[in-house]
Length: 330
Image (cartoon, rainbow, N blue to C red; front, top):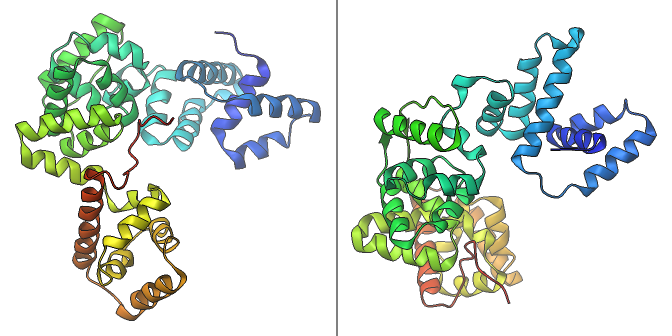
């Protein structure tokens, strides 16, 4: 994989973040700053392999310098975890720094999606479920969608009922990785919130796949299906609705419920709802919220659940769109 020098610098600076990148560029020649700036502007999408290759080269270059080589692994790990977060950054640092034992279960999310599809398509549903439960939700949804429909439903049910994953199952997954992708790993027993994980993955499916999977779940376990649907659409999601949908929703919400629900809402949700009300109605809700003073969290949650129930009913009747991922536009 060949990456131009200016692009390598651009990639590293983008990973460092605005503040640190600005400090670095203060020490760079003006002509080089222009080249690097152009390279940064041209970057749209960077695959994991290219990013890893550049960081790898950066690590080798630093390590070859005696004055800088001391403590370089710790520095590289800190840069990556600060940039990508503990899980992703730690996983990439482990691979870049050659820490074999550190290829833990969350490192699976760094594998190419198509490679995962090919690896999993003929495996036992439990192995597929364990793998998907440890991927990013969008990546898991892509892999899930590539499976035949009956297998999708089986896998989601296994994820939804997942709690503690036994060591024997982890060992099986290690063997699959070794055999099919030549990847060495050492996975430990893991604990998963199955219903929440299933909800996140289903939320990332297209509408048709989502409806089919939920229908199958309802037939198998209605109460579990209801719990997953509760987790799929939460009050903070109201901020993502179209203005028209919010306006239709507000027509159905009782005037005494809304101030209580908004009392404990995130600012973006509160703004979204208030900005879709008339000036007078908005003022009345704000006055009501201020006049009520402190409200029990249980009362806030109950009011929010009432509004979510109305939103789901409106969505089921086709009056509003809850705006889940994967819809096509024409």
